[in-house]
Image (cartoon, rainbow over all chains, first blue to last red; front, side, top):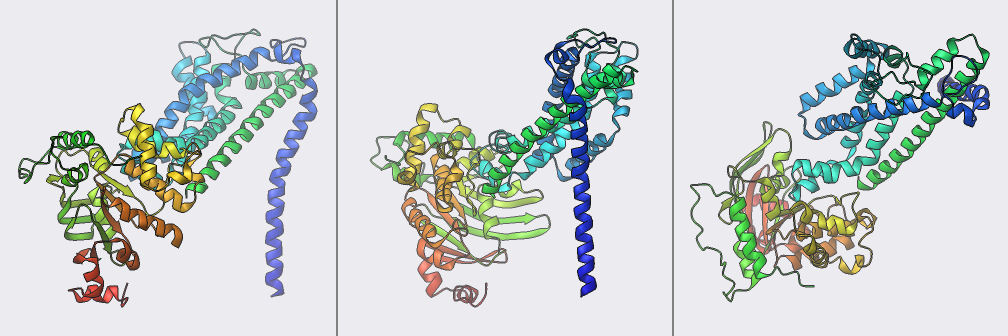
Length: 279
Length: 300
């Protein structure tokens, strides 16, 4: 009896410790980036172009990352949602399973491989470009969007979909008018988390959109300056000013990702409440 | 607000069923063609009767290799409530789901036999399931309002699916809410979410939603099994009021409920129809021994 109690206690404590460790890692990362990076943030840093020497900023990199993410989202989100609608509402048991399995594998592909693939496909024989970077990020986002949207569409209770069918709505009409609206906030959550994941990707961009001028570039057929490659470049220089700026850029990046995650979570909480009532 | 459909509506509906549901070549011509002339002194009600008789002929239903309904012959008479009773798993829900062809939505499920709405086989080749479900409405065991829609939009949903002109929708939604006995409770808050209603109100909202498209037949699959006794009583009263407007079939595992609401009761066991007859006779003096054992609580 006493022994069982001791084991119980030990397991409980180790679980607690492990959980605490995860929280601690996140806290240390956030705090150290904030300590080293927050001081760098000022209007000049956010608006000036990148520079190889002197102070400069990350203004053009922020714009470039925005364009890259925007283009990638435009490619990945519609396709991902269509895949999710197919796998959750229309596919047979077997084809749905195969597609989801393929998506899981795609999700597991190291992003440097994705980068090499896009490099071979779009850069070799041409040049680096924003388009190539956006395609690379879209490939990273696609399985995340498709899988998370599949999960939330599958959460919509069958009896709600049945109600649509029994009212004389066709399958696609039921999907568009009943299932998708019910799952919408969850689907937005999935899309936002995919954006949050892609915005921090470096490997694909390093290969396909990393040789750019320290200027504002908005044409995606040219290599676009971007935040992650800028962090990488700045941290590789011997200049302590640039090191500090790399921390500053990292701070901006992590704030953005954090904000997206919080918005995404609150949306998905909303959807769960709604579905909880429908169950 | 008068729920009774106008004569014109009835004529339109008859046109629709004949145009949208192709008649199988071998089907006999209608014995008595439905009156289509608006001069006939018959009331709209009787006209409705002309297009709302359901007859199942040798209906079989399967889930994969599981033979769930084994050759049922049964009629749902206009103006009457037919209750289908039987123990869990006897195939009663499956049988009614064959009528509006919801059964075939389940992967691996299939059925054979004839389901006649008057003289039209709803399972016939080339029949549009969307049209079938416009004529055969359904209310489910669990109230299932659309979670994202307001009270109004829930009732309007079927009308929008079927392309009802915008200017008719408000009147028909209000009439359907009235017919479902919900109008007094929701008047003035039609824009609130359907999910904000109580369980019993949600189920009546679902009934209103089904009635809004003016079906000829209403299938109710254990409509009260998730409700408290007060809400159940309200739905039962509603069934009594609605039977003049729409042919009703109620699946129930509650024999007292069948006794309270049904004119005709059918007893199913292991996928077979054991006996069907006037409710009173079924509960007091059934022909089949198994029926007697079931209604007296010896099994089930």
